[in-house]
Amino acid sequence: MNAPASPGPALTLLSVVIPARDEEGCIASTVEHLHLELRLNRVPHEIIVVDDGSSDRTAAIVEGLGASIPEARLVRNGPDHGFGRAISYGLRNMRGDAVVVMMADESDDCRDVVRYWNTLNEGWDAVFGSRFTRGGGVIDYPWFKLRINRMANFFIRILFRTSLNDTTNAFKAYRATVIRGCEPMLSAHFNLTVEIPLKTIIRGYSWTTLPITWRNRRTGVAKLKIQEMGSRYLFICLYLWLEKYLSRGDYRRKA
Image 1 (tube, rainbow, N blue to C red):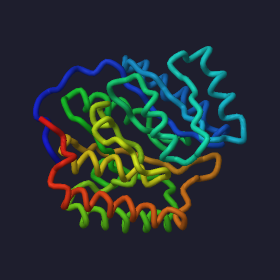
Image 2 (cartoon, one colour; image 1 turned 60 degrees about the horizontal axis):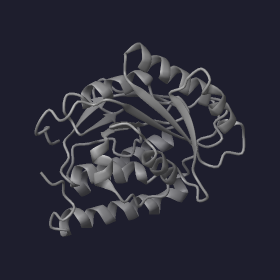
Image 3 (cartoon, rainbow, N blue to C red; image 1 turned 45 degrees about the horizontal axis):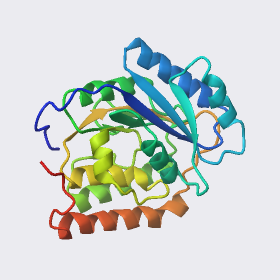
Image 4 (cartoon, helix red, strand yellow; image 1 turned 90 degrees about the horizontal axis):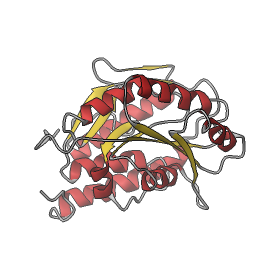
């Protein structure tokens, strides 16, 4: 990891981007618990729920929360849908100078969002959570997906010579300057979870890791389809490998 070159400007607002598609069973509790945790820890924040073409009451529920949680707002991604497109749309609509990407299904721990915020304020450009380091953990992770996850992350570590062992996890934090430095985003689907952190590393931004916890969703249906995503993950990894080794630093962060 690269240490922060300087403390960096003080952060004033945290944006939390939550892509959601057909999450009526959990989106209210996700937003409510997150808002409560951030408010209790005095973290200035906004919560952006990106509706990605839901066919259920997800959008209506989020709009209804606005009366009691003015920090929460709904934006609609379209007409082309996709997990990556939804996150990209949320990032383009955020007002904060820092952002956390978080899942809608309460698999991510709200307390870790506060830890991300505090760590960014130490001067880091990005903070990557790892479920597979000392202090981290997973609960009810389907064994087949776990094996695929560990194989994919091992492949990425070898390909990019990085110590990060949980690149594929979406739950990460960035300063807004990093997001702008990673544009344009190419990934339309779950491969965006790999694109942003790898671009952050390749382009010379400072980053650190924190142990985080994850638990499998208790409501709804998982949206990640491994059979559909393999070639997309491989595409973005090879694209960024070419940038790392052949671009001669053209896209690296300028001092």
